[in-house]
Image 1: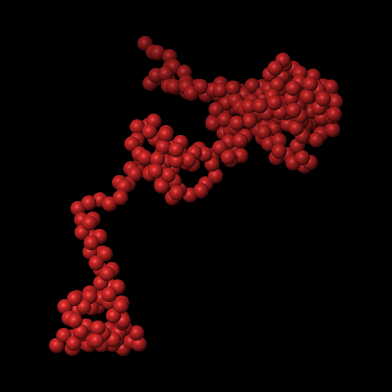
Image 2: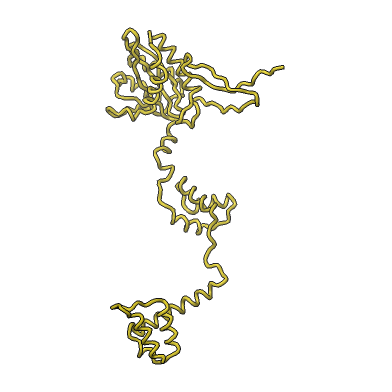
Length: 327
């Protein structure tokens, strides 16, 4: 009877197939039959007896693993989500390995081992470090860089006026805006001496390849302990800070006025220069002004916002003012 049961089970596995369809229930059947019937190997035809022995040993391992783990948590406890987020943040913001991150976590009061931090770091994607990017490199050096450039302004009588601008990269503040009808290298040198007296000169001064920036002017710049740095041919993007200033000057000032003479342009430029440094907010300095504009808090419930004209009314600055008390 047991032999007939074994043959029927094998026929069911081969029904309509060239190869047997052996399911987990079939494996369990042959493992139990091996333990209860001594002639099981003689009735077995769909697989070799060694295969049934391997099934039995695999089931034995699964059984004892289940017994050993029942009622217990295996392995180390998982790191809390807050700790994992901090590890990911520290690894992306710094060129640190597991020891440095582990030290920071200990200083924050987290009880975690360095080995756990190291294991978690292996699963993080390899991204460029924040301090290795160009933006971080420029932030670390921009306080020692200044730039100068010229732009032209036509007058109502078709004369051409030249405007020299000098800008510091650190806060994007304009430190010089001078107007001339016929600038020379000596005139530019005089403007630079007045702009950077004594030891206030930056480490590098960037300018283009205009003929006015001659070898004599370059020598003067070096005598002021600045390193002259010329941009490449037809590469205005290498002097981007100066180019970005010229755009707002034209869009926010010169496109709305008719320049009559040099004196009027100087007054307009100085007015816009003050507005640009003191009042105008800039994305490049965190929506602050180059000179620093403190955030105003509303002084009271009855206070309201008032405006002050700048650049002849082309722009305005807004501030809080306490309303006059009535009664």
